[in-house]
Length: 126
Image (tube, helix red, strand yellow):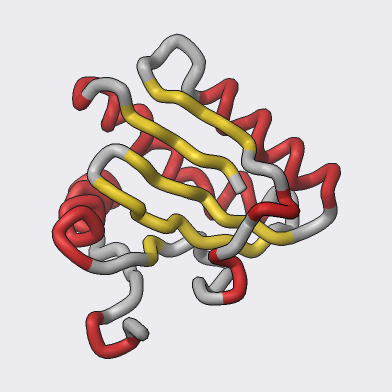
């Protein structure tokens, strides 16, 4: 899992760019499945599953893409990942979550991609 923490609203465009490329970089190029869990307005977690070397490569790509920004990028120990059992991991690396922060990121990504970004509906929440 890669955790992204925004330290400044000014860098949200860099995060949107990385999230917009997550499917290509994660699934198409590395064969991973994943999801983007919106924890809060300033904390996102990219959950991914696949071979360790490809997960490491994906994490390094995230760090490189966000270097020079005020975004903290941290790879989380695979042993400590709790969410993967509850959040569907797909080839799309779709947004997942609920509440105001999720809706805000869904809107930001829709504007970035020019299309509505999928995610869990309120009915699908547990």
